[in-house]
Amino acid sequence: MKKRIIAVFITVLILAGSLSAISANAMSRVSSDGLWEYEEYDIPGYSKGYTILGYRGTETDVTLPETIDGHSINSAALNQDSSIVNLTIPKCYTCFMTAAFSRIKNLKTVTFSREYEENDITYFGSIMFAECKKLQKVVLPNLLSKEMRYSRAAGTDYEAVILPDGIFQGCKSLKEVVMPENITEISNCAFENCTSLEHIEIPDGVMYLNDGLFDGCTSIRTVNLPSTIEAITSPGVLPENATIILDTNCEYVEQYIDNLPDTLKPNIMIENPTVVIKGDMDGNGEFNINDVTLLQQWIAGIRRIDLSEKGDFDENEKININDATFMQYKLAGIDLKYQAN
Image 1: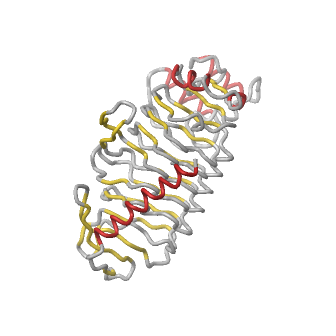
Image 2 (image 1 turned 180 degrees about the vertical axis):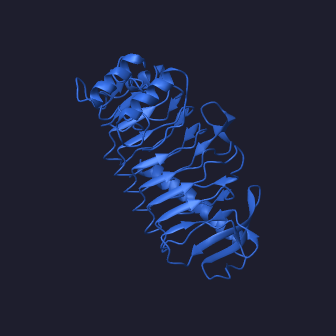
Image 3 (image 1 turned 135 degrees about the vertical axis):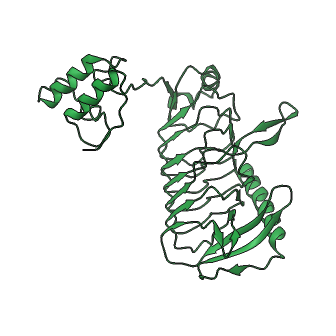
């Protein structure tokens, strides 16, 4: 395991060195407002343009600028001592260097645009957020781009959309990740040593889970796996003490678990979660007029079952007669936009 992790870091260091060499001849500049350091870059075969190298301001909630001094910006690699706590990344950013946001001391949340087209992002580097010790939540781009990989097992190239190596490695406060919708593979050590991570949902469409994915994730309790999983690269990929939840029957994962060493089997279960139907107050798998009646009774104080969580049909954090009214509209085929009260 240690050899594999070291190999990942060596690869990353080589990549990082290459990227540094590419831009070494460029003169870094400071924006006219004094807030940003930036420079031109060129990664042959991938992307070129202007990249932000650092933030000099004191704001904690920051949206990366789309232009600086008349130059369109499409990449960022922020300095570790930045004051940024909450970072927003617009759609114009299409190239993300290796270790682009790693080790930023104060960073807690990152929100990428969710409006990317499939091939907008030209480069999405490894260990992007590695060792961001305070990072708690990341909303990744909705779509990443396809790339070619070589399969040693099949002896051929294949097309994949990849969550890269070690992207959250060492993010000890990480609790929530909103994944891209189109990824098909999650690379080595993606969540290694994310010691606060309790739950992870692998998106539908993911086929391959690679080595060290959850190594050191000591708090993880549940992992949702889609039925699209076709390969898990080694016996130690899934966390030992977690509940493995399958949304539908997944023969590959069941067989994978059956073939695990006996020392691992007692710590892994498979559950088929109940599908939650909005408005289904009695939990019978249907939404009908009986559910409306139950909610009306609950609002009137006749509380045979607890609807304190299910009853907020219009999702405005209140349970009142409006929820029952909107339920009736929904049953009648009138899908009104809910209004907060």
